[in-house]
Amino acid sequence: MHTVLIAIRDPEVRMALAKIVTGSGRKVASVGSCREARRRFPGHEYDVVFAEVREGKGGPWGPATPTCRIAVLVDPPDEVLMDGLLPAGFHARLSTPFDSNEVTELLDGPVSNGHVVPGEKADAVSSPESAEFDGHQMQLLGSAPAMRQLKSRIECMAPAQAPVLIIGETGSGKELVARRLHDLSHRSDGPFVAINCGALSPTLLESQLFGHERGSFTGAKRRHRGVFERAHGGTVFLDEVTEMSVDVQVNLLRVLEQGAFYRTGGEDLVRADFRTVAATSRTPARALSEGRLRPDLYYRLSVLQLEIPPLRERLEDIELLAKAFLAEVVSEEGATKTLTSETLDRLREHTWPGNVRELRNAIHTAYLMSEGREIPPEALPTDFLSDSPEPDPVFHVPMGTSLKEAERELIMRTLHCMDGSKPCAAKKLGISLKTLYNRLNSYPTIRT
Image (cartoon, rainbow, N blue to C red; front, top):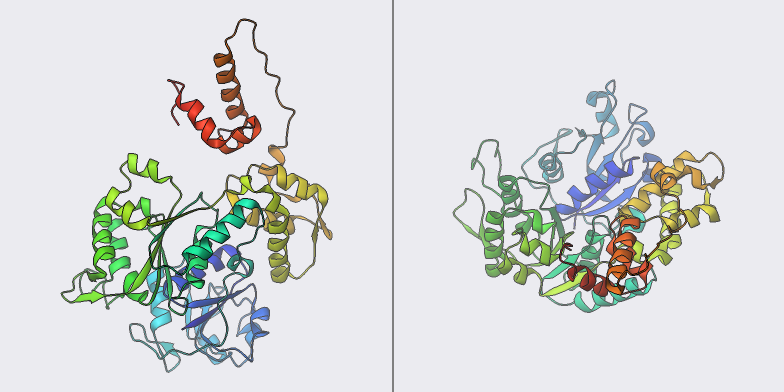
């Protein structure tokens, strides 16, 4: 298994590159600085190193780059020239935003005379290190009842070969759950290849899924192995599967049923053995009713189903998650800071439309905006300060109002106060989410 080290300060940039790298079937070790990366050597071997150097002339790498096949410089300053960095062991440069094809060429190409030769396969360099992916992101943190149930279901489903459909809101950790399924499966030694089906045009998505032959279209300078081919012996993760076009869904269904496909422009049938894990931020019923998901593909993908609870439904995990993310930022930035009890209270009061991803970003922002050793509530992003809790509004019912009408008015006002969040409204009303939906469906003018 190829292992790649990413040493980039910005967590967003680091995550974007890590997703492309893991999508090519390689394991990723991720750190926040070159200095921290150097502490990993000697003792570990990496196939490829992506590094962010700001000091010029190799910076903290010194004259000898750690043992690796390729060292790639990410977003160097304009005055830093590759010729000056070659003695330090850098063989190529890469600019953001990342082009997945360019990254893949760098990963696949061997080094010749200090330069990367794209389009050819190099011998793999084995690594004794276990997989890493942005520190705490490899862990499913949480002890709330909903999280304990999710972890239990993952453990039950992981050994199976059947496809799994993961349902969860944006930022809830669908890819993390998919990785956990892979890590606990019999395919854990194989590749985990992920692709976001909603981020690519239909033509490009087909090329990424099934691959293409050299010369099959303008710009196809070499054969490209698609997601399914690269995932042979492992797991394919199809994120936001309901966002792909219906035409691509037809071709996807054929691959899932037959385990074979043709590369674009190719005549040879390619067979691959993989397990499919798909995910969507839409409810399946909604995706089906809107025509975004073919029923036959849905039933093929959802032999097993997992639903990830949104963060607002497991607020008891806020402190655990916040402290874990803070520890991650401290390891990157260096200075130790702590969250005050007032800050933790403020985090528990937030509605979390962005789920765990929003919490992680909020902690990073608060760390950078706080000057002392403690992180006060004022250091949180501005949207946390603007939605501070207000006293519950008084609800007056005029005499003579029917019980049914009073109930309807109470439900609608509560929904309004909860910004339309049905789970939050149900919790506030002291009823189950199913009961709330039943009540709303009984109102002729309300659509859920």
